Image 1 (cartoon, rainbow, N blue to C red):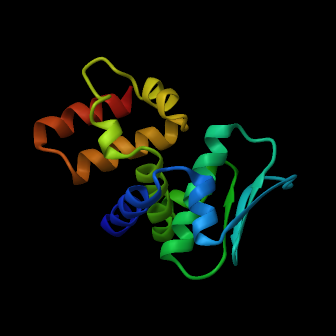
Image 2: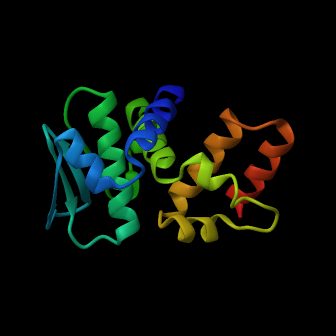
Length: 159
């Protein structure tokens, strides 16, 4: 996870989290298409294909996830609906952590966390899915915070 976090922080420092700019600078093309069945995203070569009819937050997450694969892993990757396999695979967890840290940078997140805030409110603020926000908060609690701060972040993640 630390590799993914470090890489996301490097990309954020260089380009912010503007996915269009990041893709352009990395030579990646994003294509929206009518993917069939449970397939939501495919990354191969220099192309990221995302399902056309997804909400913006989910598209952003999938594109950031694919960028993570592009920067950290060799080969082609795909994502299926409801991430049936993705949270159990190391490369998938790394790409998810990359997406979480790129789309929800610490310098923006830290000022938004306080007692009483819910993960769904944070997700809406950052325009990401609740699942990604909860994942980001759990990683943050594990890797970055003191014990007291970690307990507070875990409470927010579970709301």
